[in-house]
Amino acid sequence: MASTNSDAKPTEVLVSEEQRTYAAWLDRGMRLGFGMLVVTFLLYVSGMLRPYVDLQELPSLWGLSAAEFRRATGAPIGWGWLRLAGTGDYINFFGVVLLATVTVPCYLRILPIFHAARDRVFVVIVVLEVVVLSLAASGLLVLGGH
Image 1 (cartoon, rainbow, N blue to C red):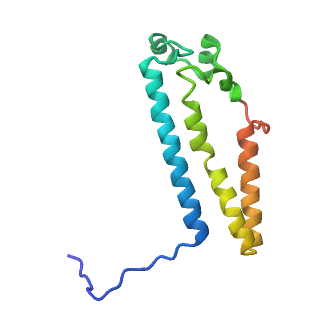
Image 2 (image 1 turned 30 degrees about the vertical axis):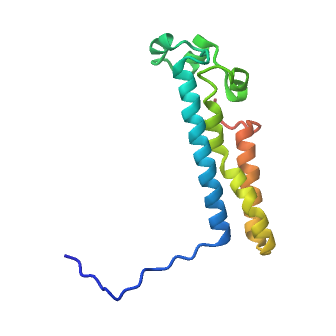
Image 3 (image 1 turned 60 degrees about the vertical axis):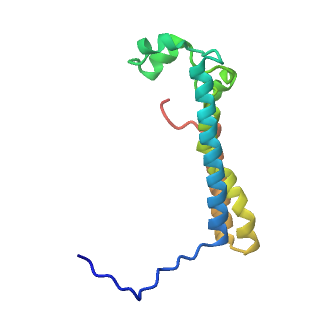
């Protein structure tokens, strides 16, 4: 059995302003994104929005590769899903995009904190992070065989 020291004080963790701010924004973004996923899933399974691919057709498509699925259904690639955003099976992409990109607004929110503290290194890091993440999400940089 491990011994305990009743006189020991809990370790105090110091959390900086930018850490608290980033965490608060990340928490709000994650909750909003999760809420969007729940609502859009309910819209999909309830049938309130017509799906692009009928639910009854899905089991026969599950075994296909992504390329075969796209050929069989005419599903879009990249940001092409936006033209189908009003369908039950694509509207949930909004929640996915929010969850995938919530880091960018978090970084933008802490940028003024680093700037005010004259922390140039972190200002540069944050700006580069935002640029790289934005370029990656945009689809402008295509670096794979997809």
